Image 1 (spheres, rainbow, N blue to C red):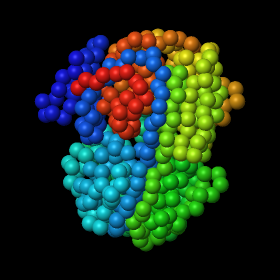
Image 2 (image 1 turned 30 degrees about the vertical axis):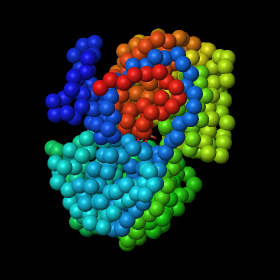
Image 3 (image 1 turned 45 degrees about the horizontal axis):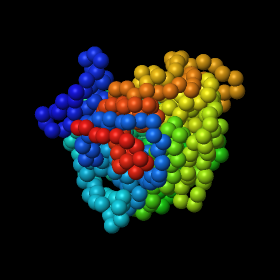
Length: 479
Ligand code: EPU
């Protein structure tokens, strides 16, 4: 049973086998907040599985670019136009944060177009920032732009998906190198730059996506040149660089993960169509494979999914690259097991492993997935076990021959033995990508499943209920 929060904000409690602990309560309120922000009226899906997904889904701009592009607009005192913006709760969070800083955000003429007017950026109250940030980690990326515009920034305690500790030490170390003063306060972190920000030499300990974006957003208007080594080079980062270049930045991407940024005094607004969401595309592809279906992912681009496509093919999935998207399907017969390791680009993304693991429960043999990016990204497999999967998680991972990624302290491995028929169960979504995997598992399973806490999925999957309906999924919704 789910009960409503008297404030009307959303679901407060959901039945667990035992009373929910603090972490579960936090996840439930994140889900409720996320769902409410995009007008999602249900918290629970009752899914009748065992039917292949068939049809077309559209994917729009990548959550992991759009949110950063919105922050980048803050670097100018102008108007920017961003196209293909999906309606996601994470996008709403950034919109709220921009608005409390005086940015006028309006829907543009086309669907998915946002107009961001940053001509009157002002300080926001700490309490407002805290209230709008919710559990998102995005506020950390406001530091550079706000330091340039206002000379100070405040970052509340950061959340995001509970997929590990997710520290911000690389971000703070980089900001200090630019000349920022970082003060840790009980409510969060206050930054100031009394002497302005200056170009720096930064070598990241790991090619972190967020820290690379932090450096880009700070260096473009810092005085002098910044040399960033061991940078992340994900397609979403290249798209952010394209946006910054449109704004007037001078950034060159050199071989071996080196990025050089020559600071400029002023930037102007941009007009940009966001790169498509390759995480969403890979999720629907995995759903097609697990359910023995056939899904055309409109908007998917081969160039940015090559590593995923290779693995999809090795598992036995078929795909066809068309001009306006990629069709993914299960060709019949048995799927094959694979050994994969998650990695930074151009490796196999950590966000792809959760949806794909559901398909691997249906492969004929033993698959191994090494997670090398986050320390806690197999929590979602508990639900698959409940549904009949055979998955063993090795909390410290293990060495394997021919590893591309050097071993990291935090890594774990999941060993999946298939094929195991899945049966319906009552499961609770733990995080964004894990949540989508729960949907796939319920769609693959024979019988009825109840998937609770689905609000979290709206952080990264636009209109997933309507899309599931369009693919012929059988489900009903409950508040
Ligand atoms: N890390 C540190 N210190 C830092 C920053 C990162 O130790 O200061 C570590 C992290 O703990 C992690 C690793 O570095 O072990 C990689 O983190 P990274 O900074 O690359 O990730 P992120 O910027 O926090 C983004 C996406 C994630 C995606 C990762 C990897 C956004 C908003 N999030 O996170 O997306 O998994 O890059 O590609 O862009 C998702 O969409 O579900 C999601 C979690």
